[in-house]
Length: 455
Image (cartoon, rainbow, N blue to C red; front, side, top):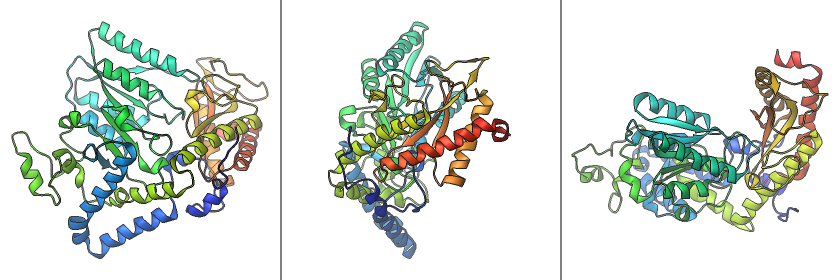
């Protein structure tokens, strides 16, 4: 596989705000955005501060409408089905805290769920009769097996007398960073009359998305991670058929309609209310916060459109640089990249994204034995206890920032330590060569002084 887009890579660094001495291998965590988008953000902030009442009350709704319209076109859904919220976690909370549950109701989710989302489920369980069923998945695993376990769990819950009310799953999971068979899972939910809630935090801007075709019951995605928009803006897509289920925002906005009240009352308080549904009005002005990142999405989309090859070029480059770069780092470390199989470097379904998860050369002691399923161990490297593995991961992340001016996400999975690396349009293969050497140096230091590292 050869990267074809010569205009991408280091030439793109001039378009971004990154420190020249910083190599950004963790774009998937916090994202970053181009200088042109920053200029648009500053412009909206200046307009806000110059005449706060004029902008917030009278101009902001028009800019918000324009941004929602652009994002709706990009995702192929009607504008009246898409609103903006602060984060994917806010949207997940909005879904789960609006639904009414019975003692028979169960939510399904996978063990690779984002931690805050799992905590949300537990929080909801404390105040409702909802129960939860976690589907264990350990990579390497195929999409077919993930789907099979999902179907089997549905049947198991029903056999026990339960009702699977809703399922929460990722487009691309965070830890490890792998692509999920979310399209197939949505179809199963539709067939089985189960609400599908897709956590697409790592979706928009990283992979092609057609939400109209997907037709999930709820879909959320952060624009700051991969779309090149500032932090604090996520899309929340709710098809018209489900909007009656979302009665309140979090926190509750002044367009909330109490039971027995008329929707006209909410419309009367909002500018530009004609042709807007109660659902749209509910999210138009939730609280007095800096929502200017909601307004810069058109600038982010314009930046992407001006790159030769547009969206296809961006998607392809991110995927290929993560694939080739991840393989190179694994080669330097003498390990492998997480996928459906091991040590073969294949572009399998779970790797069809902008992440590469490269194993660090340590195995982890689990319940008195090294349990890494199918992982090869190297005798020259120490075997870590679970607490040592967490300490080593933390130490490596700190050393990468302090000594190498870079960062990756270090995580424990399948009794091994992994480095989750993000591909991006401003990176080149030489950067991955450099990262591999940096990781190797740190691994050597762990191997020679484990006690000093873990304290």
